[in-house]
Image (cartoon, rainbow, N blue to C red; front, side, top):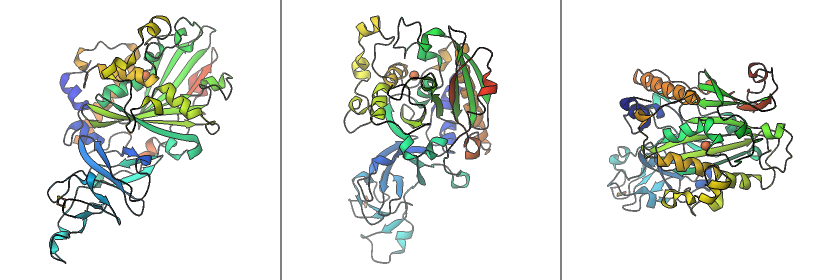
Length: 426
Ligand code: FES
Ligand SMILES: [Fe+2]
């Protein structure tokens, strides 16, 4: 459990709040690169950390991220004209470049000195790994660009997507840092004693703190005396990395949807206090994704093209229709009765309410990773208040981090096997 004031401290993200100021020390995903497909294409509305913004790709291909409302009389810049390296407000024609400078003021006399004073809020952006990242903090604290291994992977090996989630970012992320729930809500193998998820439903967790956050190792004891061991990374403040190679190592062929050796992760990016975008990345680590693999994977996760409301990143299976739960399926085959791994997560996380009341919890031993994460967030908010640098800001802290999972023989220790496998290759 968490004291009510600590719960507030690590969930609310508006400017000036402890957690909001913490997030403003890191580059954060603002949108997918694909949302701005070409130079001078239509601008896109962005809401990030409780701020309303507008993104546009200028004539040179650079992405601008401006406040959503015009500096003149606050008309929406979304309806602006994206032309000649700037966004022109359609109300009276004032034009701004991606740095927020006013580059044309047609309603004032030519040469008016007023033009130099008119400014829009503009945040720096950088594109990497298929994502437009934004830095919304004080210029003097701006860190080096994000440099997670997956952002360096070749395009043939990488895929990113995003999905809308109707709840606070933290309870969504806690689902990602919680390995135990996969034996329950994601268990599509009811009655199958051989399923990894059924052989040991109480994984033992070890958490090791690092300069970027921590990694944690979960161990499940299998019936044949071997162990299923997964090493996850938590990279401050809102990213999880996990590995999915074990089925490949176990000998499943390239055609098996679960067999492609890869790593996956998410960033849970606060839209505001009560909504987030989940950025999903997946990376093939041995060979490029086979043809058609990704469509199948995204669908399996519940976020494929057919799972989304057209022209949005919102799921068709959502709270308004109880995630289309199939009670007969739940009775006979799958634990949740809901299709799609992430959809199963959203049903539970969104159903907690906009911001879960953590003062009412009874935590257990499988919550160790979540407890450590909350402590690190609290610690980080205090560091920011003291103008110190929190964990995970400096890319050197996480640049080499790679997740891993393996089946280990009895007597084999992850501490001997994993170090060689957890160093970034790209
Ligand atoms: S409100 Fe934008 S130019 Fe007037
Ligand atoms: Fe989950």
